[in-house]
Length: 493
Image (cartoon, rainbow, N blue to C red; front, side, top):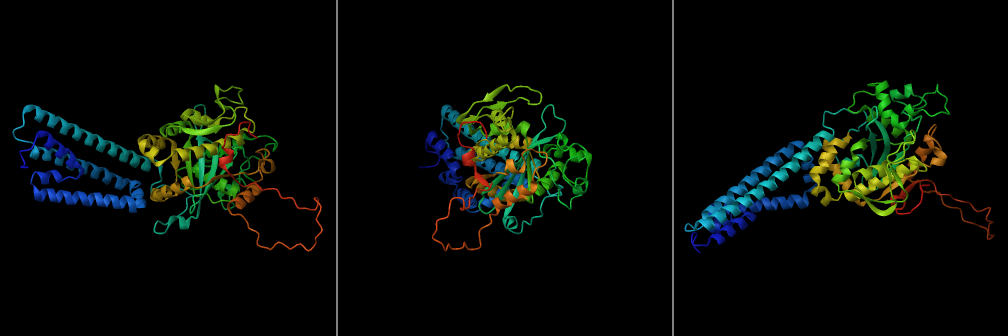
């Protein structure tokens, strides 16, 4: 078939299909050298993309978390799209029959225009996603010039997780909503992650804990040697301004700069104190603005949880303001952003309100992890990124983001459990918690002590009485969230 003796439809079809492998339409038009060059370049580009995608996934993740490289990706995406459009238009121009009438010419121009428009829209969408990713990385994660007094020094020249076989991340839910003066961290939780397996233990501290301790070498220990409270006040009375949830706001206000330069002094102070209370080194923090938490859940398309008892939406125990409604019990209830927020926060007249809320918060974390599938995140990425910019603060460095993403993939398929700090024994109220007892529980749960001495062999055949038999009671430890988050209707206990 000679170049100009084909139908207008055939020329159009060859040109459009030729964008799958740029250069093939040039070969049909007998532009052998140009077509061969484009085909070789296209195959090389496809091969490189396949190799990188299949064999260098960690490198791709690192590139996608580097703001400078993201700019080059955006420029490269635009250049590739421009070349594709030029190849499409010139291919059709070389292949279309010279004798085609006005109708076929108009149809051909229309089809080529629509295809070019679709390619432009796709490129623009991709560029917007990359821009959203770049903005998220720059605004949320710590840049090299950020200041922290509690963040560990990690070398990227060595395997990050060899240096941190267990990483402890402080999760803060900051309630700085309407009617609040300053920020209170109503949610304080530690995620202790085995970086080899991804197994994660969640530890929650109750918001009304008093006497929160500080490390002996901290300047705060000199001011509060017996913990964060006021000894001049009757110790039997509650001191709400000395609760755990008031530390983020009050200590930096009363003692600015006491721990040294910091981008988030309240979070650094909590890392020190929570770490001392639990016997852990807290490496990083992630702070979420609870007032905007709903946006993140909405961006994920909602979450699914089991609700075992009516959960109040709104309400205020102190002011005797009843809730506007309740989230009704039921299995596999899908919650939108607002309802998910209140599922995690609701406490109006709920028995054991703070502990019940901690359990629901653990279930909320698990539900978000389950919902954040790669397909769902990619499909809603721009909304998720925009929500993340408004909701999240952290001291995780930009240079470690690739390693944390890889760790997150392990966490998603690993076991998430809860460490029970034993309320009845260690904090029947929040006025004087037994932090030494809590440290023992955490240490045993994260590093179980195995029996090393042999059990003595019995030498008597006499069956001991029931009174003589030792009784063992399980110690508080890591409980699988599958049971605490399952559908078991009834009030919290």
